[in-house]
Length: 406
Image (tube, rainbow, N blue to C red; front, side, top):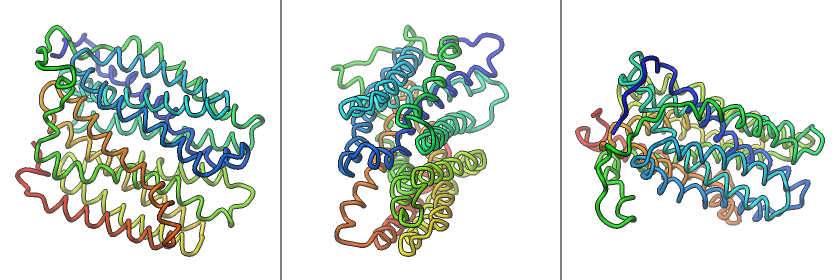
C-alpha cells in the first residue's frame, strides 16, 4: 500500500501540515465575523446560524466520501483539490452577498472535509519510522492536530481584528487567508505520496459499499472514542460562539475584537496543550480522555458562572479551560483512532472520527433554542453534567477492549 521513501524525508510531513493549517484558517476565519455580519450587514441570528450550518453541510459528506477514497486513490489528489477549493471559498466569501456567503461556507466545508481526513492520515504516515526515523509515538496525531488548531486559532483572531479596525472590514478580513494558501501550494505539490493505488487491493461490492469503514464497528472505537468525539468541537464552539454573546453589554465598542480574542484564547490554549496531551495519551489513552473531559466539565461550570454574572473575565477563564479540554480530547481521539484503524482504513476511520467531532457544532444552536425556556447558566451547568456522564461512560469501558493501547 505504501510507497518507498526517498533518502531524506524527516520533514516530508511539513508541507502537508502547513496545508492543513491554511485550510483550518479558512474554515474558522468566519467564526469571529458573526457579530460583524449581524451589526454591519443586518443579518438575523437565524441567518448567521444557517451560514454556520452550510459549512457542516459541505464538510461531513466530504469527510465520509473523500477519506475512504484517499485510502484507495492516494492523498495527493484529495489534499491538492482541497487547498484550491479553500482558496476559491474565501474569494467567494469576499463578494459579501448572502448567496455568496452560503456558497463560500459550503465550499469551505467541502475543502475542510477533504483535508482533515486525508491530511491527518498523510501526516500520520509521513511521521512513522518508515518515513521519519526520529518520530516518536503519537507524533503524527500531534502534528496533525497542532497544524489544524493553529489554523483554527489564527484565522479568527486575524480576521476578527481586521473586521474591528481595518477599512472595508468584511473584505479585508479575508485577504490574509488568500496569502497563506498561495504560500503553501508549491510545497504541497512537492510532498511525497504515501499510497500506491496499484498496491491497494480492489474493494468488492457497490461504490457505496466501498466507502464503508469497517474499523468504525470496533468496540474500542464505539465505546471510548465515539462518545467523547462530540465534546472536541462542542467545548470549543460553546466557548467561541456562545460565551462572547452573553457579555456584549460589558464589551460595548469592542465586541468583534473580544469575540476574536475569545477564539484566540480558546484555540491557542488548545494548541499549546497538545504536546503534553500527546505524551499523556500515548502513554495512557484512558488518562488522556480523563484529562480532556475533566477540563470540559470544569470549563462548562466556569462558563455557567460567566453567564450568571456577565463577567468578561470569567468568559476568558472559561475559554482557557475549555481550550485545554478541546486540545486534550482532540489529540487523545486521534491517537486512539490511528491505533484502531485497520490497514487501508486510516483516512476512512479518521473521517468518521472528525465527522463525530463536528456533531459538537450543533451545541450553540441547541443552546440558543433552549435559552427561550431556560437561562443560559442553567443550560451550561446541564452541559457540564452531560460531559461528566460521558467521562463516566468512557472510563468505565473495559480496559481490554476500549482505552488500552493496541
